[in-house]
Image (cartoon, rainbow, N blue to C red):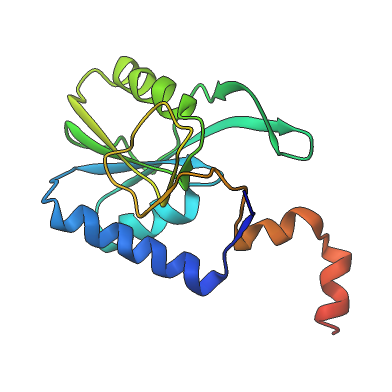
Length: 169
């Protein structure tokens, strides 16, 4: 199992492919909920492309071993959005489905918190082979479960003082 390294160009292309798959399925949804942090960029792009409101729900399960070991899923108590999300059909957006535990727990939690929602479908860029949950929409299936190095992860190892060397005044 080799690691998968993704550039910004590839990352953006994959989000666009995901949008086309959702569009081609004719899924008519009223709002998008993205899971932060990994799903922020995915949710933002999809919200802009489909012209629907975006909510952000923070979740966390990769907190140990420099973010490479999954532990108990934590789901934020509140979702953030400019106003209450409309409608009864939502799209849940994230970057990937790894073990599947997040999808298994978040979808019922959202339905319990927002009883007006009757349907939630999921959309991710990557679906790993080890996942116990299958997203409704995805771009790449990764049966060997590689560790994915996403382009924004560079900032996990940088500080503003590091950037100062790149961008002197």
